[in-house]
Image (cartoon, rainbow, N blue to C red; front, side, top):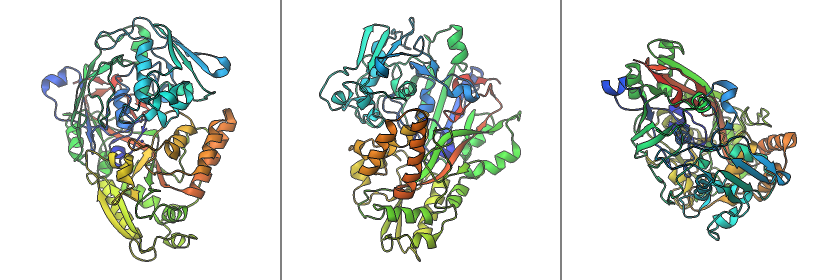
Amino acid sequence: MHRKSLLSLFMLSMGVALLVAATMVGVASAKSASSGTLIVTQAGTGFDTLDPQLSYVSNDWGLLYNTELTLLNFPTKSGTAGTKLIPQAATAFPTISNGGKTYTFKIRAGLHLSNGASVGCANFVRAFERNLSPKMYAAYGVFDSVDKFLVGGSKFAAGKASKISGLTCPTALTLKMQLTQVVPQWTAIMGMPWFMAVPTNLAYNNTPGGVKVYASGGPYYISKNNNDTLTVLKRNPKWPTIPYFKSNWPANPLSIVIKSNANSNGTPELLQAEKAQVDLAGVASQDVVAVKKKYTATSTNGSYHVGPTTCVLWNAMNDQSANNATDTPANRKALNYAISRNVENNFLGPDAGNSTEQILVPAIPGYKKISYYGGTGNLTAANNVPGQTLAGKDFNIYYRSSSTSQTNIAEYIQQQVNGAPLNMHPHLIPSDPSGYYHPLMTRSIATGNGGYNITASGGWCADYEDGFDYFNVNFDGRTLTDTGNTDYMYFNNPTFNTHMDQAAAKSGSARATAYGNLDKEFMQTYAPIIPKIITTEREFASKRVHNWIYSTWWGQPFWNAIKIIG
C-alpha cells in the first residue's frame, strides 16, 4: 500500500495502498476563500488512518507530509530536488560509526510541537515505539524489518521489553541508534512519516483508525478529523520562521480543508473545482477526455496536471484462499495470461500511466523492463499452462463498487474467466466503501470462506528508493500477522524468502542487480499478482491555485506550497 507516496483520485478509487490519493471537498464560503484556505477534495475514499505510526496508505502519507517533522525530509521542491532527503529536525545527516551499525543524529534546538512542547530525542523514540509495539493495531515497522534492524527491536515488538534498547538519548537533543547489521537503506527509512516527532505521551492505539487528532511538529497540525468525511489542517504556530525552513517547507495556506466522499465517483467534485468552489480535485477515468480538451497546465480558468509517480498497480491474488483457486503458481500464471493488462488499463482512461508486467519501477535501482505474459489477455496460453486447475473453481473478485474503473475491471475479469476455455465460476464481492483494506489486511477474513481470490486493484508506491521496499516489505510471508498485513497476497514461499534475504544483505550495484533478478524470478516462477501499470497522477486545480509545485515522490502537488488567490 505508498502505500507510501500518494496518488490521485483514480489511484485511490483503485484502492492503491502505499504509500497515494485523489482529492476532494465541499463548497467554500466566501470568507474561507478570501482567507487563504486551500480546499481539497477526495473521492472514492476516506483516510485509512492519520495516526502517524499506523498510516500506510498513499493519501494518508500525502496529508502527513504537511504535518510531519522528521529527522530527514523531502524539501518542497520540483523535479529531482524534491526526491532527495535533506536534514529537517536533524542539524545534519547522521554520523555513522561502528562499522556502519551506529547512527547518531543531532537535533535542532528550538523546535516545538503545535501545542508548544519542545521537540527532542524522546519525541522520535516514542515514534519508533508506537511503530513497533504489539499494543498498536499493527506494528507496521515489522514489515520493513525495523524491529530486526534495531538492537532490542525484536524483543520490544514481541512484547518482551518496555523500551527499544538500541535507541538512546545521550542528551535531550541527541538520538543514538544502534543497529544489528549494516542496513544500506537506513538513512532513507528516516524520511518515512512513521518516524515523525510525536508527543512523548501519545498513547498506543489498537483500533484501525488510530489516534485522529494530536499535536505535531510540521508546518501544519490536524485540528479536526474523523478520517471518513472531514479533516482540517491549521498552521502550526510554532513552525520555525528561519529561512532554511521557510524555503524548504513553506506554509502558504492559512488552513487546508479536506473533505472525503467514499461513495462519489469524482465527477461532482471536479465540477465544483471548475467553478472554483473547491481547489483540487482528482480527475477520474470518465472525465479525463473532457478535461483534457478544455484545460491545459497553464489555463487561467483552471488547470489540468499530469505527473509521474513511483507507483505500480496490480491485481493481488490470494495464495491462501479458502477455495484454492489462486493458491498454486500454475493457476496464478494462467491468470496472468488470461487477464489483459491493456483492457484493464484502458478502463483507467487517458494519461493513466505506462503498462508493466513487473514489480519494480524505473526509479528503483535494479529496474530492467520485463515482458513475459503480454498485455492482450491470451486465454489459449492461459488454458495451456501446465498444471493449472482453474476449471470449475469458484473465483471471488473483490472491488470497490463506488469506483467506476474498479467496477469495470471486476466485471471484465468476471467475463474473461467465465465460460470456455477456463470455465471458472466467478463472483463479484463489493467492498464496504469506507473500509476497502480491512478485509485484505485481516487474515481471518481474507483466508476464510467467502474471502477474495483476486482484487480489482491494489498496488505499491515507494517508501524509499530501494528494492527491499517493493519485495521484502510486500512478499515476506514470515511477517504475516492477524491484522494489518501489507502482504495481502498471503504469499509465503521459503525459497523466495531466502532469495529476498540474500538480496537485502548486499549493497551498491550488487544489491541493485539482485533485486532486478528477483523481479524476473518473482513473476516467472510465483506470480501472486498481475502487475498492470506504472501510474501517473491526474489532477485538476481551480483558478484560485497558484504556485503549483509537483512532487514526483508523493505523486501530488505540495499542498503546503500552494498560494490561494481570488
